Amino acid sequence: MDNCIFCRIVEGGIPAKIVYQDDQVLAFDDINAQAPVHILVIPKRHVAAVQDCREGDQALLGHLLLTCSKIAGMKNLAESGYRIVTNTGAESGQTVFHLHLHVLGGRHMAWPPG
Image (cartoon, rainbow, N blue to C red):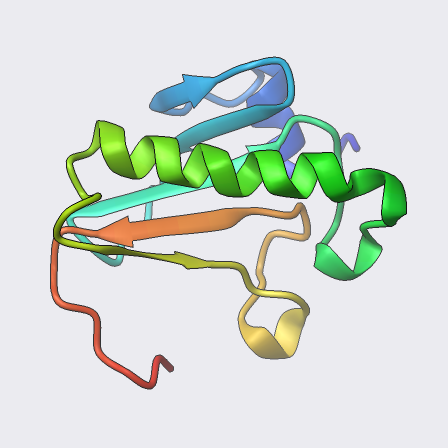
């Protein structure tokens, strides 16, 4: 997707502070951090949102969640706690239409969010 900012980050066309990557996913610091730790975890393959996932994407979705857990461990959030968020659709707050999970931590999280 030529006009997708996250696809351009995956391709190396836009710089990002990458904290983790493997053959399926890329994780990098959010430039608009909402917590002391705010990492975005994205599939390297373009998927617009959760609703665009299919049966064959089960392994990818599980891998995204496991990657979030791995990053929380890397950032020393496992004991204190962290939040994983994904927005689906404009009304939910999704502004980049490439599936991404936010890993947020390092501060108290209020409830309900938003």
